[in-house]
Length: 227
Image (cartoon, rainbow, N blue to C red; front, side):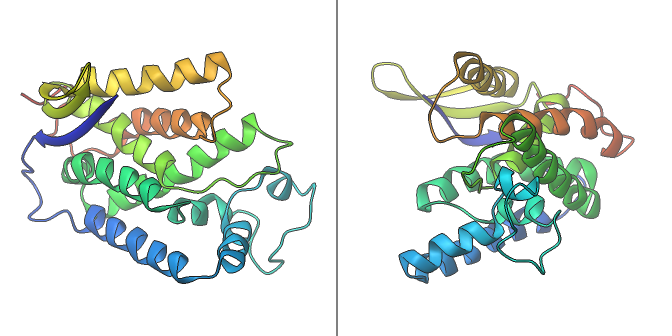
């Protein structure tokens, strides 16, 4: 297991990553609301606003007829199954999101984040068209942030907690840390893992981040930077 703790990569263009930290706060507030619900209400909220492939493809009636068919491609990304699910996603967003926002600017980063949310959801949908389970979580969007980061700052040092025999903090280049992460997602897809994780949402979000980062970054931000 490799868990990122911190990156040595200061922001240069913005004073504060308002969007990244605002998204973290929004996800936290929504989860606190979820946690305040009864188990039945929690489950109903998840059904109403998550991606359920058989609902999105109109094979099964939408539980909220007034909600546009495209809306779950965004709303699912702001719901989380439990506090560990939330904290893991927000940890990655906290470490990598500020630099990607710095490279793009506030508004372009917000559009980028939402695009990664939607396309991560679409990747999950395309690979599970007949599935009746719910997809929730910001991991597709966060994977997009990681895809942008590995392209923009592959040489930046990331302090990770690596479990070999015992957990050991190690500073390694972002390329190796994030490269290991995406390789593990591909591995689980190839072996057909039955864990309750949407590997395809991760891959779709990551690919979106790779594709959009060169288009949305500031002109004077080079690719393959970091130190």
